[in-house]
Amino acid sequence: MSELVIQHPVLGDLIYEEVLKGYVGSIELSEMPLKINLVADADNIEVVGNQLISFLESDEFEDAFIAGLERLLEIKNRDWLNDGEAEYVLEELFDFVSLDAIVVYEDKIELYTDDLELLWRNRAVMKYNHQYQLISVEIDINEE
Image (cartoon, rainbow, N blue to C red):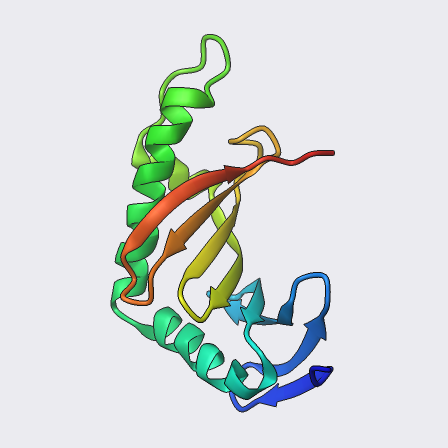
């Protein structure tokens, strides 16, 4: 059985959620709350937590996020435009897309966005390796 609460020295209390198979918590990023989920066993949680901190503090974080937005822009303009809706440009996405959650696995990082209806109540998932290189951008379809 996994420990139910782990205290990370920077991220604070992380609570194990069986459904998510990881430790969850939240932090503030640019004065906005950000959900975090670290998917690892209790023995590796500090390593995965430190990977998250390194990612957020790295100079590459902004470039990685912009690379994800560029891919999202391609997907939006190709597959997610309403009839008669004009194509978007990257600068417009900055007004619509915010970071909602980060999930860190031992082998990848996923950024979940909140897009204010840009994707019709669905959200984008940007997947990166631990060298902050974009692997893919996928639309997480809301089944409600």
